[in-house]
Length: 67
Image (cartoon, rainbow, N blue to C red):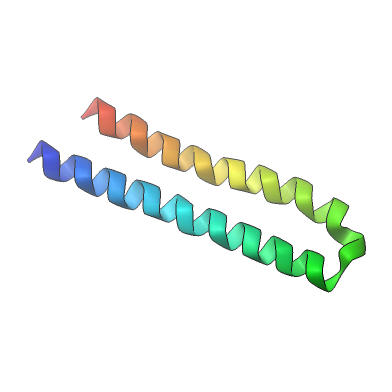
């Protein structure tokens, strides 16, 4: 039963952040393509948001090893 729980944790815990990071970067690049002058205002928060989302993936790995 613990193997099933670990598989679910890793599957959902990594898939969610992967989709989130992809959406963050796609929308950020779309915004830069529409308004290249605002690239300085977009890239900083884009990388901070991606880092926060990636932290959720790391939390999933921590839970994987705790179970």
